[in-house]
Amino acid sequence: MNGSKLAAIVAGAITLGCVAFVVVLFLVKALWAWTIPDLFPGAVQQGLVAESISWLTAIKIALFVAVLSGFSRGAQVHTTRNE
Image (cartoon, rainbow, N blue to C red; front, side, top):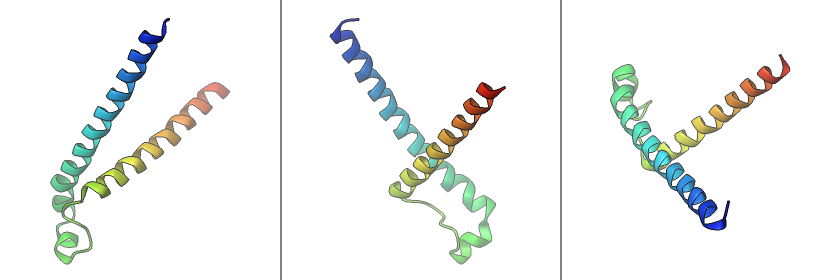
């Protein structure tokens, strides 16, 4: 494989990763605003839970979920290799 094909593959993978990250941010922000006020109306009224979240908070939640997914994936790979 020559260098230009490899560069195109790497650029495509980076672009796909960035697009997926932005989509996940929109999903986290939209799902929070859609579900949390319905699930916890009293807590939202009392100010215990935020009705909507900022973009920075959405990034933090997305990163937290990604880390947990990575741990879960690592545990699945580890258990299937030992069987």
